[in-house]
Image 1: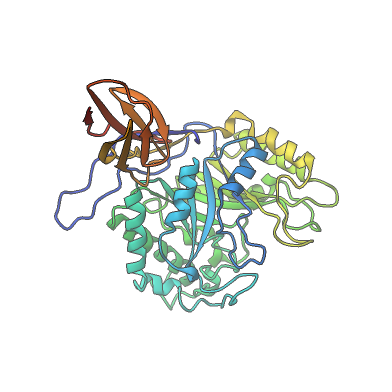
Image 2: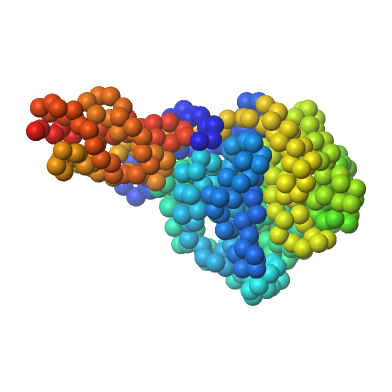
Length: 446
């Protein structure tokens, strides 16, 4: 399992009749020191018909084995054109593998690349204005309810690289610098719509008690010439955002030169700008570089991680490598195994204890006590069954007050029960953040 630690218990929800339940599990704060390590690992299908959302345990294992490190989170995309249902199976797959699920919520109705209907600009169906107007409130409340009921810590962002025009949620497609089409006449409409849509989504989640969702805002890794596209205009406020996020690529193809990690953050005071309007910690949500003809990838990796660990940018408390080699030359290929030298550089970089921060969450993220334990004789063996929970990643079977063994299933067989007049059984749930209390005992008599 990944290294997690449980935080303090938070107060429960109001006991009002109409108030929804509230998740006991809470949010991900910055570590007291160091940084979390996450990754996206090439979750694409060969024809791009399922871009960035086909998560498999094999892909997670592949990256962790190559990196020589367990990840804190696994990053994947949810495209709204494929449905707005909570991605339960993907969330459970990641959580039960030992990492925190990180969902990129992308409100758009077509493909950015690959096979399928192309994305239209501006967005017609999942527009920011439609989100603000509440057209998807029912689906979003359902998403929040399902997330809450798992009591699994979930990380989420709304829109990706929001200043970039490739995303239909960008200000570019939602009013740009106009000030007379929406809201505050002194505020650029495009970014204001994004800000208000973000606030609307977070408010819905709060109303549904989904306190186990940590919210990131994901900026591009650079500044833009248009003043209406400045990062500050998009920002919903610290009351709605838990983490700032950026992308930082040294290069995305084999032709362009590789730009050092710190260059863009230093340019025109971009890091200072981001941290001036928010007190939240900063995560590099997409960190990567494509090797070029000069074979500069190993050096770029070493420099980037060393710069972050040096404390030069002290608000950076998480890094997430974007590991993909899907596009043909001269396109993006940021796989850490693109060469043995690159792989060695990455393994050495993340071996730094700075990137070994343990994820701690507010609230109580332990699994609930298993319910409805039954035990029955089958010949000379005992068969047991119980009701588990989504947040449990395994269970411990106890016999006569002593731990017997662990299992991931909700059924078990005791092949060698002791020769006693009565035998008692109980079970408790486990996950990376702790264990439940023991269930009610079941006693069998011979």
